[in-house]
Image 1: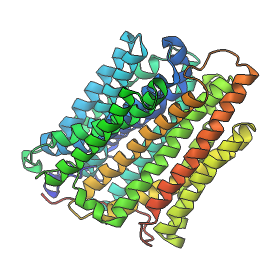
Image 2 (image 1 turned 90 degrees about the vertical axis):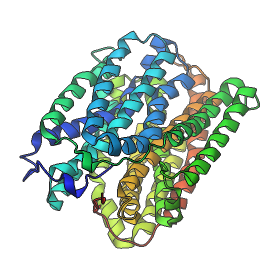
Image 3 (image 1 turned 180 degrees about the vertical axis):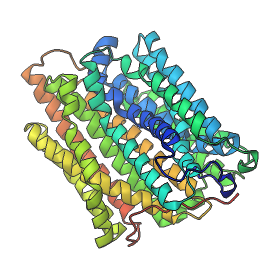
Length: 489
């Protein structure tokens, strides 16, 4: 998020109640960004049957949004500092709403994937700005923190409520309405922002050049890396297209690093990673998002395909995640205060790895075991996410706090893309590239459970290593609250 400079302190509000119009509009914008990450996940089986899609295509319906969203967050923040924060948010909301209406024209999986990628671009234009504009509403630090708390709760609720809201809607309407509804929400948010958020002033903006090559290279590196996973299953791991994807991803990543080191105005100043806390917090955030995205994507398939549950029932099955996400904050704060960031984050990493290991056994032993694993995973998620967000921002120089917040969001989106890609690829490789509709045979269910066991076991090792490896770089700080620092002009 990009905080407004001191000179922009005008049109301030004395309380949250007085600022209810702009605050509600910003929360609505943030909610629709986050809920769209997971809203369609519950509809994947329905979309697959309607559009004739296999698991590899379905993973891109989810992953395309996260890919473009995460890849462009830093660039969008940079553009907002140059073109105007409120202006960028209004443009992003308008484009997001208009694109959502285009779902009525979709007739193939490829068209839906392209639409989701475009929606991710529009959402990226909104995400770094919604939080930053909160600081423009209030002068009092306590009010700012209370407003930020509201924003965070709304955003996280949107992310985890997506499947439940989507499942409930699918009981009454076609899956296209899950995107169409974004249009009126975006319109209402636009009106609230226009009425209540002060306009940008020229003296508050920077004239530094945009790092367009850096943005293109980062998206290319992440996109090719994820595509190489699906290509390996569809075309073979030694096929020309798979090898080309892997080489392209490595080349794009290498060129990105080289460009950022030489650029006078880099999108991401790589020298920041010399700080162990910054590096470790970003790495751990990748691990948390791999866990969350892989479990949500995998269990949606599990509940609706293997169990044959309706979308509504599958959405309700995510309630343990939703409830624990809202209630686990006191526990994560206690761990941080009692043991410090490093130990608390290691405990969270152990919960993540343990929950995934439990799922590798529990998928074949009923919902009760899966629910317990959901709770354990969410405790780990809440602990690592909260602590790493605080540690990363606190470790940044005073003039880099906005980059720290954007880096935190980017790490989570990269992890979401990787997690979705890993589950979709392994299920396709171990079970089948096209999961049949209707009642499954006992042999296919057994094969699916076997594929899930291997998938979650591998993820337990991967997530445990990434999250714990990042946690080891943290300090023994016991801070549990973010203290936003305004950037100098």
